[in-house]
Structure formats: structure tokens, C-alpha cells
Amino acid sequence: MTLRGAELKLLMAKRVLAKVKPEVLSWARESAGFELHEAATALAIQEARLSEWELGLSAPTIPQLRTLATLYKRPLSVLFLQETPTGFQVLSDFRRPGHGPARYSPELTQEIRIAHQRRELAKELLADIGEDALAVRALLDLNMDPEAAGKVVRDFLQISDAALNKFGGDAEGRTAFNFWRIAIERVGVLVFQVTRVSATEASGFALAYPDLPVVVINRKDPPTRRLFSLLHEFAHVLLQQSGVSDLDIDISKPAAQPAIELFCNAVAAASLMPRDVLLHDPVVSSHGRSHEWTDEEIASIAKRFGVSRESLIIRLISLRRTDWAFFQRKRVQYRIEYEEQRQRQAAAPPKPIPRNMPQEALSNFGRPFIGLVIGNYFQDRLTLSEVSGYLGLRTKHVGK
Image (cartoon, one colour):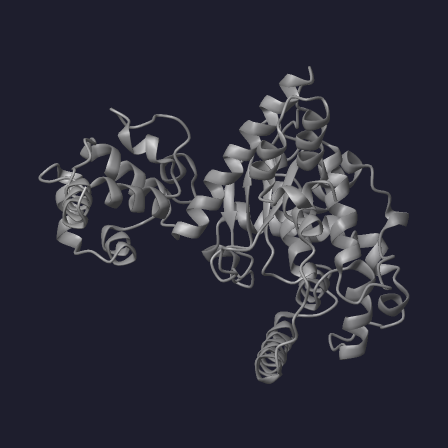
């Protein structure tokens, strides 16, 4: 074949139109969390052209369809389906508490879908080894006193009061986060961490299935904030009400906030900082009734419980040991400190940090999920390639 003939053949291949259903193209975009103009911009095409594809007035070429599949995080074969799938649909099945179907970013939409898919995989892997997922009953309801609900959480997780406020040796709060995560995973909850979602959009979300529920935490938050998110989402699980959570709600104005979010925040605080344990803390018990606290006092107490300074102050407000005026002043101070730290880090020369891929996988997927995958591999039910794909690792890292 001549060079000219090869060029013509390639050109003709590019012009072969894909025989796809327009409604499937619309479904794929919407289920990926893209508005029409957002998808068109990401594809570098005119919005009108994408609209024509979804209306059936024209069709994409095969290469264009591959680009769509990549953007929407779908296998190419899915876009050739003759009708839209009727299974788990993020935007219709997953609701922000107190509202209807929410408008999520494509990143959050995809993480919700991925979490659901991982749960389905975990159920299959359990079935392959002849085991059932642990059931997690609805142990809480919105009419419960948060203090009593916090005790229900600790009793269910088998965490004694004596095990709390022992985390002061960890400056970052990772020890407390891992302690609570292991306890929650032990009762049958899958805990994942993600990095693609903006911290301003969501601190975490929960898929509150009665068996093998899922909690997903935003790893862009510091460990102390992640800990509070973990208990907040676990409260959603024990309510058996799924939801996406943003911990920056204005809790000083409860009438304007969703009741379930306020309740889950209160349960998280009561679980992490039980009333009697906190009030008997040496610094708290010797402080007196003044609503003013020094930075050293707040930092030392928060560190022992593994929580953020803001979480501690809010908890002290609920126990009438300080007030909202003190919280607002400190919140402004902490935001300024954070911004100054961020600017210092941005100005400093970057230091290359070697990545530990096996450790990242453990952190993101959790030991129960990885244990299921690796366990099935060692029983010759999964190939090394499948393990690599499920865990997002190169095969050379699987052994580690």
C-alpha cells in the first residue's frame, strides 16, 4: 500500500460513525456528573456538537467515542449498550440530606460510583470464599440524645472510656484516626480515603447499606478533621441514611441547617470526647468557669483526644464551658494561621518525597478490602493482573 493509500485508509477510519443510542450518551454524561457545557469544554468540542450527539441528530466517530468513554470513566463497551442501565445511579439514588438529587462535581460523582463498585466487588469476593458481609443495624435515630448516642457508638465499637484521650504523643493526629478507623472496620464497614475531591465540596460521604456499608473520607483534610468526618459518616451508617457531608455548616445557627447533619456532628463529638472523660481532663477540671481559654490549653486537650481545635471548642460550647463568641474569634485566628502556613509552604522550595505505593494503597483502600483481594489471590481466585487493577498498583508493588 502506498503512503497516500495508508493516509486515506486512516482518514476513512476516523470518519466511521459509532452506532450508539443518544440516550446512552446522555446517561453516561449525567451519571459522570458533567453538565453539557462542562463535558464539551473537557472534550474541546462545541457544545452544539455534543448536544447533537445526545439528540441523535449526528453521531461521534469511534475515536471521539473513546474520548467520551475516557472522560466519563466508563468502558467503551458501555457506550454501545442499546438501553441505559437501571442499576445504581449517583444523581438519582444518592441524595444530600434534606434535599433532592444534588449537583456534584464530576470528581465527587465518580468517587461515589467507585465506592459503590468496590462494595459490590467486596461482596463478590466474600461470596467466593463462602463468607457473608456483617450486618450493621440501625442503632441510632434522630430523636436520641447525642450523649446517649455517643455511648451507643462506643459500646458498639467496644471502645472504653479508658482508651480515649491517650493520643497526645502524635502531633498530627494519625494515631487517633487509625485507632477509630480500625474499630469501625472491625464491625463490618468499609472505610476508603480519596484525594480527587475538593476539600471545600465534601469532607466525606456514607453509603449506608445494612450490610457492608461504606464510609469515604477526603484525604485532603488533615487527620484531625478526617477523624471527625469518620465518626460523622459512621453516624450516618448507624442511622442507615446515606449522605454527602460538609463539616463547614454553620452550627451556631441550627434552625438553618439540616437536622441530620447537626445530629451526626453532635454524635461524632460525643463519641470522640465523652462528657465525663472531657470534664475530668486535668486541664478542663482545673480551668474553672471562665469562657476564655488559652491557645496552649486548647491545643493540649485537642491533641490528647486526636481532634481539631475547632471540634474541641464546639464540644466545650455544648458543655457550657465556652461560648460562640469565643469560637468565632478562634475560628478567624485558625483560618489566618492556616493561610499563613499555606503561603510559607508554597514559597518554600519543593522537597521531593518518595512515594510508598503499598502504604498509600493500605491508607486509601483499608485493610479489610485489601485483605479480601489478596486473600482471593492466594487462593488462586484472582490473577496478579486483577489484583493490580483492583488496587491501582503496579504488579511489582503487590508483593510489598
